[in-house]
Length: 167
Image (cartoon, rainbow, N blue to C red):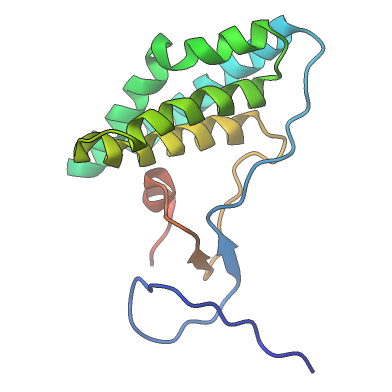
């Protein structure tokens, strides 16, 4: 008989937990490339619109700091400066998912390298934006944690935290 799986980390609360594990760091891998650069561009535009719509719906229920974070994310998604590098990469032949990931990873690296705490903290928001759009591009869509799941991962994205039913 095999030994039970034991994970160690920093828990959000003390006590014993039992339930299915949900990996917060799982990556989206099911994007199917399109035939043309125009189709890739359209797919990315649609995914950005889906992510913006989801964030807008969440922001309508949020208050205080949560609302501020969501407003920041929506503003970033609506800013052409964020998406322009991805669209430029699509014109060179990259599929939408790789172009978006490459553009946002570059942006994230800049935020992470900042000497200001505020900008380093915003890197988590940019990661969340990246992943929101990648999920919208994916055939998998948005995978939700099952009821009673134990969430584990490096960090919990702001939108994942706000979407989770903590009851």
